[in-house]
Length: 466
Ligand SMILES: *[C@@H]1O[C@H](CO)[C@@H](O)[C@H](O)[C@H]1NC(C)=O
Ligand SMILES: *[C@@H]1O[C@H](CO)[C@@H](O)[C@H](O)[C@H]1NC(C)=O
Ligand SMILES: *[C@@H]1O[C@H](CO)[C@@H](O)[C@H](O)[C@H]1NC(C)=O
Ligand SMILES: *[C@@H]1O[C@H](CO)[C@@H](O)[C@H](O)[C@H]1NC(C)=O
Ligand SMILES: *[C@@H]1O[C@H](CO)[C@@H](O)[C@H](O)[C@H]1NC(C)=O
Picture 1: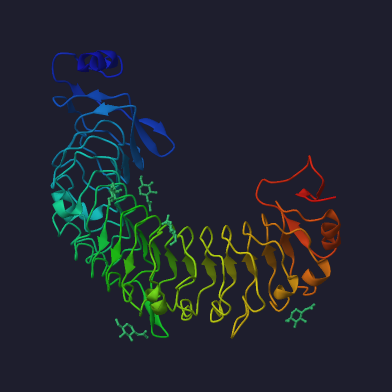
Picture 2: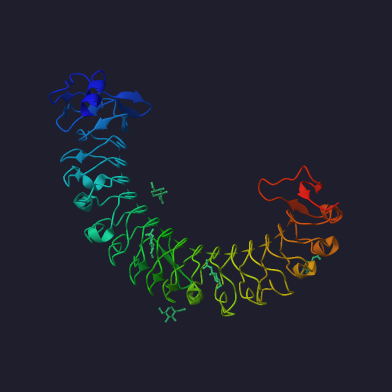
């Protein structure tokens, strides 16, 4: 196999012989600000002549290569050496370098002395190197802002717990698609500059107290709440328990598609401005007491949770003063208790698509304080008869979507009584064409994406009963 590869590459590389180690000359092919090194095949025994970068190009990029050991790299901004079957990075490979991409190789060895000036490195992409096990080289990379370590079969408990100790400037850390089952408490604590931690697609089962206690330095305090930008992606894991004080600072937490059964009431620090929480797809979660401590929450996604209001305390949403969007779609909601949304004084959009709602009562969407609701989506429920007057008191309601219900007539007079309503969705229903015509004067009939009926009786592409 090797012989075939080598033999076929003779033409590309000067001075290469099949049987002995060679000294390979690396000549840049210039393209924009890049030095392209193409079609180089080098085994473990080959050595290189230094890359001559006389025109001081910005980037060195290896293209269509097969190189066992990376050649010495002169002063450069960026090296792109992905998917070249790289196995080893030796001592003194780099002098000054800011960005390095060695993703999707077969790295086994990365010398802790590879960098002459390790603190100069800002970006490192190690994705897709499942054979790399010794990460001692990371400890000197104190200037890193972006570190990608996805798709590497990593398990955090097998790593040195001080692996991130010097990375106080690190902003983005990608550990998705690994084999992480536990998050060792304290491991992430030194990352005080963090803004994005991607741990999605692992096998994490529990978030212990303190696991994400990171005292980030880039926040500010306002009205007793600490605001910062810190996004956690923990989607597609196996998390069932989140203990109290698991998270201190966070602006956005994605817990989509886990196996949550319990979230501690104080899992999220109540002094932090958590703005977005995605709980979608956790069908077993039944206790929502933790919502009472999320005063700054803007977006709450509780879709696909097999959720209904049966047995849920009436005050479930009462402390979500800042909530603007509530997603309860794809659940099992049949009845909406009157007043359940009454304290959501900032709510703009409520999504109730794909539930089992058959009846909307007067006052269901009334707000005690401000009434800011501007979109209600009740599509794909089981509504047959609707008193359109229930929406009249909603001063700012601009969009009402009722696609896919069994509504047979729409009372245009009632519906348009309040002039703020502008968009109306009634596709996939049995409404009379006559009713739709009546609506046209004052409302815009909106379609579902990519649905426009043209081969059946319709008004503006909305199917109707003639
Ligand atoms: C992390 O890496 C994976 C694999 O390359 C990628 O799909 C994902 O988008 C990355 N996450 C972030 C936040 O960049
Ligand atoms: C999640 O846990 C179940 C057992 O509880 C296991 O069968 C499954 O493979 C796990 N999934 C992942 C992604 O680790
Ligand atoms: C914040 O949480 C603590 C418990 O960690 C609790 O004692 C305190 O009353 C909470 N403060 C507010 C304003 O909810
Ligand atoms: C959803 O909840 C119902 C009622 O509690 C239960 O019978 C059903 O098994 C649940 N479905 C899932 C997918 O958990
Ligand atoms: C819309 O509703 C509000 C609140 O009930 C009311 O004050 C306003 O007059 C209504 N507008 C129209 C045009 O009926």
